[in-house]
Structures are given as C-alpha cells and as structure tokens.
Length: 200
Image 1 (cartoon, rainbow, N blue to C red):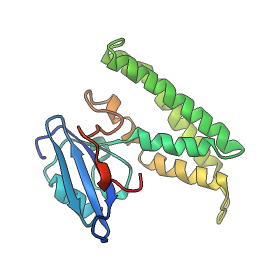
Image 2 (cartoon, one colour):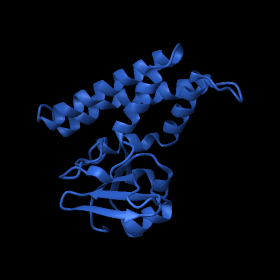
Image 3 (cartoon, rainbow, N blue to C red):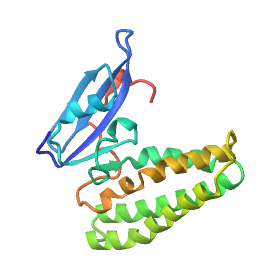
Image 4 (tube, one colour):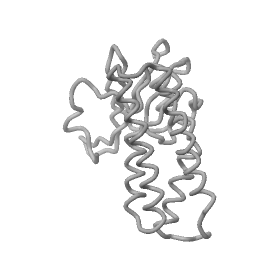
C-alpha cells in the first residue's frame, strides 16, 4: 500500500466461528482488499498499511488510526453526521447546537455535490467551504467552552463530550478540501460486504 494515494478503510465486527474478529476492508481506486483479523488495534492497522504508507486514509475516528498524522487522515463525515443527528435529537441547547452543525454540514455537502457535478471548480469549492469550516469549528469550540459539571451525566454532558472528541481531530475533517481527489466519506467496495458485516 506504500504507493497508494488514498485508502478508504473500514473494520467491521465479524463472528462466523464464535470468536471475536474483524473484517478489514481497504478500498483504493484500483483494488479492494478484504482481510480477516482478530484485532482492531493500532498494531493491526499498521500491519495492514505498512510503515511506509504516505497516502491519506479515509476512516472513522477510532483510536487505531491515531498513529497517522492528521494530514494523512480524512475522518468519515457519515460517522460525524450520525453524531450530529444524535446531538440534535437531545433536548435544550443540544438540539440548537445540533441543528446548527447539521445546517452547516448540509451547506458543505451542497458545495461538494456542486463540485462533483462540475458546477463549480476546485478553487471555488475551497473558497465556498472556508467560512463553513470556520463557523463549524467555532460552534464546536462554543459547546466545549460551555462545558459541564464534573460527574454530570446528562444529555448536555454527552453533547459536550462528543464535541470535545471531534475537536481533538478537527483538522482531519477537512482533508478532502485540501487534497483534490479525496472523498469525505469512505469509498464503498464494488459489492456488498454481505453476511459477514455485523452490527451496522
């Protein structure tokens, strides 16, 4: 994988023999690789990609990918959108912040789809998305600053924790706007993962 520009990775739970295992899926522009493994650890991730990989990995924000520099990661927006929907469905301030973040996401993907359809060029995409990025990051920061009481177990505390987690890796949300050819969500395999995919 050392010479590949981008890898779209997914590790899904798989249990065909009663033992806990993972099916790793790596999709590139030219090949799709399925590998069965007993671990989803950082060591397993490094073994699959190799130490010399210099491209960009599109994946979720699971900790096994944290060995990669931020500039080599594009965090999956499909996973992020699920988190934002969960925030928006909570009561009170969570709903307000969640709705705002989802609105920004929809604007972002509106520009992205215009780019993919050839309606705008690459520089126009970057220019259009910059204020969205700035507002999105400022909104995450505002939630984190509001904080919650130590030991608090409320919907709002869950919202703050989620925003804290995304803020730690926020640069990885925008790699697709800095590297032409990178997608904001993992590329799908050319056929369904099928019965081995569990718990999705």
